Image 1 (cartoon, protein in one colour):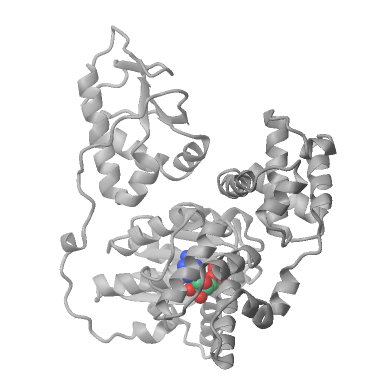
Image 2: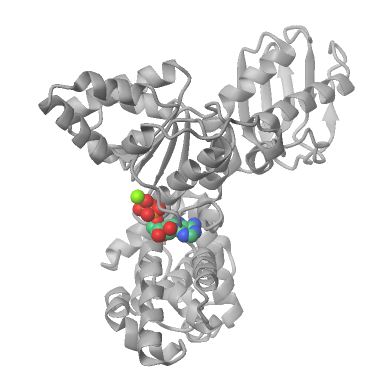
Length: 481
Ligand code: ADP
Ligand code: MG
């Protein structure tokens, strides 16, 4: 083990590493230790999460027990700081002892280290073989799982890849790894799907685990019934003897004090016995309203993973995957049109596809752009916000404090380009105009410029809260949601 108080190693913010001559370690030792830590993080978190967040972290400096770690972007830095610092600290401590602090910051201009040799992801075949499942009372306590909501049927894209990676990791291990796992996101974005998928996968891998899935509402109703029938002892026993407790839509317990009280005790009893708890909600723990602070802080203790609003690519992917599974012949232009027009959530997108398919089989006609308008006219009208490109340009220019004519100008300075791209994105998502038409409204720009801008802003909205907020504000000023 290396004595951190005596050692000193540093890498400058340029690609060159600089070592203090008084260091107690040589660089090879440090590289080796850092590789060990990376290897343990990988074994802990699983390959997908490790590759997304940890692999490219770089050890920058160790001085007097303070470990500085560089991340490739602000986005990675925020995620690693909020979710992985404790785990990093734990592993650094094993490797180096006396760790006083871990600081993670953005690495500017630093070379990323080459990928480490594999320490091997955990494979299904590495899992212990479980005895066959015995029919248990827990199937009665648990609500039914939807057979379609599996990992196989879950389409992964930018907005949900973190939640997906964490969910698959939790599903493939029989001991709690992140406890609790807290999944959150807006309506119809896939929270319940991921919860069911975890339950299916865990059942398959560990048939003797007692897994209970229910919504917070069902939990409350059971609790009230137990109170009424004076058999709360049985209720407590049932819930406190499970191995995995999954509570969906936990926001429901907001303002329901005695249910929260009971849930709090169940939560403590289970985590105290090292049992896995998985929760979903429509908001982050901190933003849940009417929920006691002590519960919120428990929720924040484990892994919090959010699912973002969909992007065009994800919507398109989901439509194509669903069409393929249902054996539907869905032309590309129809899929693209739906993915552009129905942006609210995945449930509505699926509903639209089902209606389209029912309509075409009823009429005996193949699915086409025309059938979209016949079958989905009302949905499209509802989502067809009556807003013009000129209005969008005006609001965006005002919001970013630039002149309206900059929307058409050829100037390419950053403070002009960004608002212009935001306006192009909004024009694509809020009007029915095509890329070339939109290009014409922006000083005769090419359709590829508009496509690029739309994709860029969609991506930026996921990675940058400030941009997301800008878009929300502008939409509210345009009276669209
Ligand atoms: P939530 O619980 O967040 O309100 P659901 O999990 O019920 O949303 O998802 C709504 C519908 O969309 C479900 O039919 C679900 O199967 C589907 N869905 C959500 N996310 C995905 C995805 N990434 N891939 C495929 N289907 C999805
Ligand atoms: Mg749900």
